[in-house]
Image (cartoon, rainbow, N blue to C red; front, side):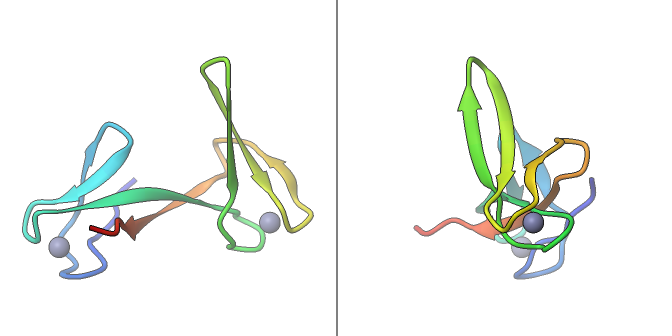
Length: 75
Ligand SMILES: [Zn+2]
Ligand SMILES: [Zn+2]
């Protein structure tokens, strides 16, 4: 996974469950995206496992198929 900063296009570092741009010194949340409709997925956390659910009719999405995009965290 090699994502670039939406602000400056520098490649983002992964820090635990979020991204960091060393140039902007900003953090970005990992937004899970449905590979079929490209809408944000609902993240369901249960017993240490994480499931991704598409509310647009695609149901549970396997983690291998989930697309992630950086989402600027509000300050
Ligand atoms: Zn940046
Ligand atoms: Zn979907």
